[in-house]
Image (cartoon, rainbow, N blue to C red; front, side, top):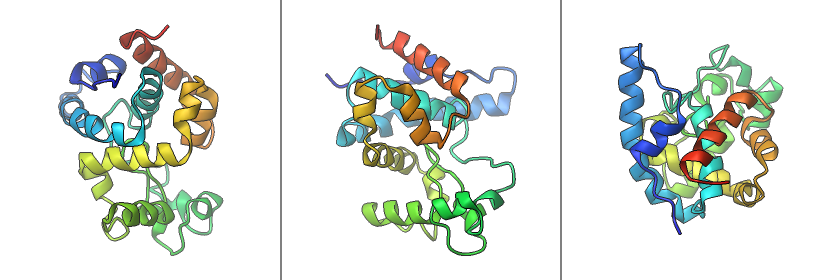
Length: 194
């Protein structure tokens, strides 16, 4: 049975920005705009069981700072992804300026020229020349994340409830592990997963 993503479900797992009115308004808009795109794309990528949805949403929640930012805010403005760095090389950045241009965007923060090229070609969209669209268009923010998730075999890992391996593949390490665990616990509670 497919899990329906709702405003209330997203709101139940995110830490909310109550006192900061600007952040609160952005987060509320995202809570409302993301579910239709999720309900459209999740079935296409087999993200349909409670465990798969739980792991996907927990990781997405943390990657986007509780569904607030669809664009990463890197410590060095993206220079840490320049082609002459290991991180930049790993994500296929080739030219000076690629680091800041291809910072993480979308629900799982698609990063690097190579990934923007790959998913742009796959979806017949010019994401290399217009990478900002991955953050600005909810459908692309969700679809790129779903396609990445699927390409890495994360449905199978979610079926096994393998939080550590999913976190490593999404994050390249274990940054924010306690918050990811907390988000997963909240979503499992909301979806009545034992």
